Image (cartoon, rainbow, N blue to C red; front, side, top):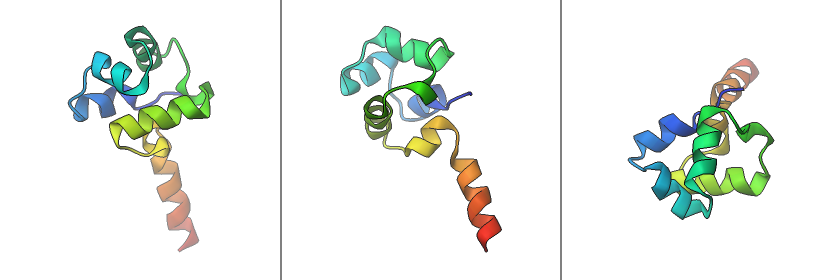
Length: 77
């Protein structure tokens, strides 16, 4: 499943090195999550939360699930 990590990181003005420093990860791991070599959907919850916090976004936005949530909320109305 595709994630929004690269787009959100770029929109925030952060480099991969900046994000790596903020999260305690390596730049190589950030790159692998962005390019799909590692699946962010199968990462530890703490990793996903650290990235979301560093980028000031929600986990749903990061994982590309915010549209699904909006659709569910619309159906409930």
